[in-house]
Image 1 (cartoon, rainbow, N blue to C red):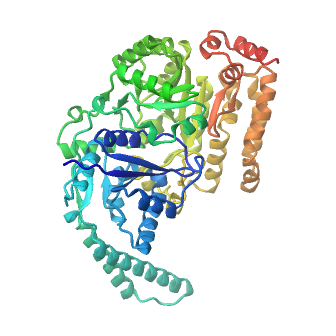
Image 2: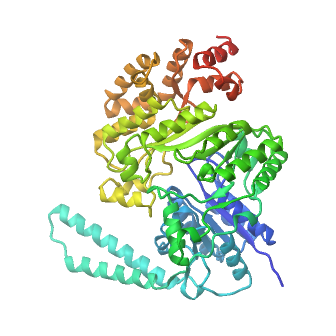
Image 3: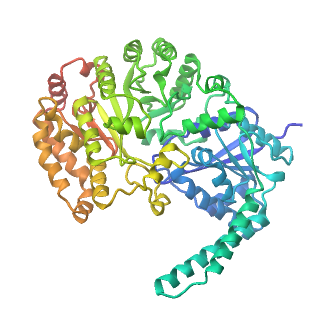
Length: 601
């Protein structure tokens, strides 16, 4: 007889970008369709109240879930791990038996054995787990004791080895204390007992070996059939509140998979895991999957009926334009639907068919997002494995703009082995391109990626800072030396100013003379002066942007978030309520005049 399970999802998402987790919504929908119940604890400071571990345990006692399922990014994993440990401690104090603790998401997928060795989890999920989690839920609900669940790391015999984990933890603590004492003796000039250190190290290694021997890493199963998955469970999240805080932007996915092997992305590791476990070529894995365009349109209709103030759909596919026929079919279905909400897509500078550009513009696409990443050819090819030239980038931006698509580029600074000259190349490429907007972030080497290995080999990783980072837009865990660290921070914070100051190298740009002295002042600041000034950057940017606007000077300003530089003709048109396709049909000077006249300038 079928018996349903309650699954409590936990999403540690503090001090980072607030958003809708497509993976959790899909997992929940799969469980709901099978008759199970789900709830979510979404921990984000922008969605108060942020519940405490005690309150989560109260919920566990009251609702009686059969599983606690965490989803963790790398920056939030330590927070999730700490929460799981605290829940176990609090439960022990109350004499409460916790249900199995399961963790999945990007970080566990990239370094699953490391996560399992933390000892707090009963199961660690790898890859896409819609089918695998359902199988795990069914097995646990039926009382099966198994250790062979696909896509999961399990403990041998299906039981978490509490005694071995406790012994290993004691051995590790003793070894660390011994190391600290030896270090103190060394600093004081006293002679430490090396045999004690050797013994404690051996004990720690023995304890870890016993724990490792209890881990079973099962192979992954097939990728889920994307077309047959149910519509994501929007109700799992407080979607209306998230939507309102994101100015009406709603994300959807029409495809899964990406053909590229960028060193900083998880996709290459995911593909390698499936290829190894299933013993197939990449072309036989079914990694690239596409939803029927009509199903996506119906999901959009449902969202519009269920939620208020939807202003923009974001198609969060890794690469929407990789399959031209799919992109064209979606554009046709969307245009035929009569939905008037604009949408945004991700593209690649070498994956934009002119037919797709035209169809996107005609069907209501507002922004075309491109991964530029660096202005340095060497960095793109050798460090990031993104084989594309500056001409590729410039041509794609020009093609998008010619179809009146507002172009948006992602760039990173503080990349492994990157030099200051190469960082200036990124500035110059943005200035030369005339791109509609760009987002600048500090590079973060996700554990398990090739870029993480490169960062370690180059000696850039500051281990003590990795644990403290929750976001990749405002801080870096890489060390390039004090002088370069300061330059990188200034560049990432003030990238629109740097770009504006170089605009006249590539054409007539009166704004360059306005911004160049400001950039020179920033570059001349020492660390203390910069830290005092840094908090005023948005205020100063607003002031100088107003002056440039009044002078009818095309420029970039910090808009929408602290890491985004937006071209003034776009944000002025938006402020004036002018549809971008209408504004973009005019030459830039006329766009500026039209927008300013609407605002009474």
